[in-house]
Image (tube, rainbow, N blue to C red; front, side):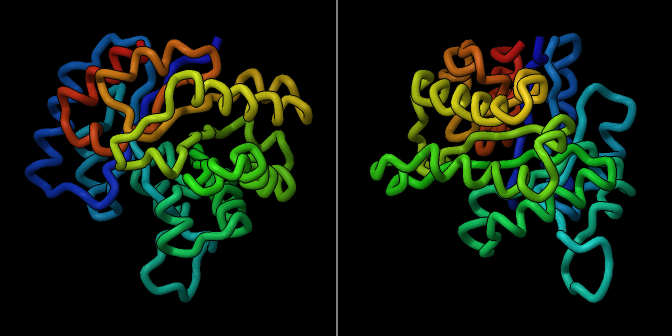
Length: 249
């Protein structure tokens, strides 16, 4: 039985005072929930987050990393550096990284590989744009994003990872895929991976992301192949994030 997982992606939000209040409020209210919970915070706040969360049930991680292990890459952050701050998770291939920063499927696969090699749990983000969905290409796009990792590292690499399906048209728009739409893609992802390795597919946590709110979380998480959520805006409001975690539990 796959345990539910909820990850908050703060994106480029927060400051030292707000972070302290938010993390403390989340901690007070998730104790005892039968769900794994994590937050992925901006690089400058990793030390603060580690200080607050060390020894608690709330895990933490980063929102991206370099595909290079070290070197003359000004402004980049390596997997080993994230390990120094106690990160458990790291997002790879978020649609904003793909669209705004030009990350290709090949770059995302390389980042996945260095994360895995450094003991981090990569959260592989996949999803289609509205134009691609309207063209009937949803599964073609999602499979291509998955296969970039599988072809480079083997399907077994997914045994130590998480996949997050985030339809680009639903991220930050207030538009959410219906539970039926989301379940259809999640089930297809599991079948696609299962063609290569059924055991990996069955154990793989597949999260849904895209305007998840406390009002729609329970219906989404009730679907058989939706194992939790990757939460954006609602992760910045303790009451909303906790309500989503409770819905998952």
